[in-house]
Image 1 (cartoon, one colour):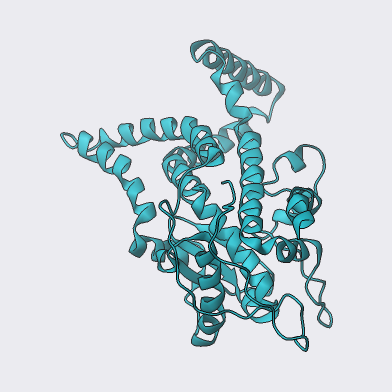
Image 2: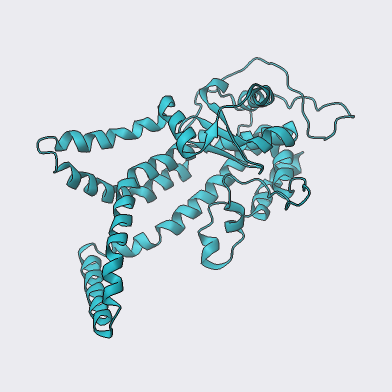
Length: 337
């Protein structure tokens, strides 16, 4: 998303000089001027959906085959599965996703008092209705946050307790950027429609493992298995015009799209005036406690920072850019301050 340049909001005054951190902010209630369009789908959102399409087609075949077990109900089974994607935007269903799958909880009263003024300021600058999203908490001692489904914005307990309000605002603005750009719903929608195919592929791999062990127990069996595998690959490549080879690159393309979406979310936060705060979050680690390692810089999910720093093909599968790259893309906004 292109950052808004004509926001009616000016950055609020920073706290007094005796504040313990220069990025601690004070927030005041203001008139909110809502934008005409609160969210959309940028090129990375559409790219994510497009790259999930082959898995979705495989899933459709699986669902169709399963529907044959219900004679006379095939259209209802397939149609019901196709329409099930709207649940991504159904708030009660999102609550189940947040609690059961993302392991989030509702904020306590104290956490709500800390979060709501910051969230109000972020959404006001963006021209977005603050009540259009639901704030959640992840029980974690790491600095992390997430945007999921159509309305979920989650931050860790550590983020609500231990970082300046300006840093918290930058993190929330980043996650709002994922929602405004359509990254969150596109990612979950792509995952949902590819799920039957992924489950089927996993079950097939597990079923074939015993046969593979038996075939590899002898030289003749190994050669027979290799010949059958080559024949199957040849038939698949010829009949599908090389499409299986393209599927091998999908994980790398999805990771590249994920990295681009992170940079766009950073740009959204920077465009709202949080570039210095976000840069400091990305370039520093949290305070070290006795007997514990320093906390990692902000990423959207645990482990992303480690993968982004990996080399070779492992680095190509990283869903987040490394902090240096993110800071480089923030530099134009920092030069304006």
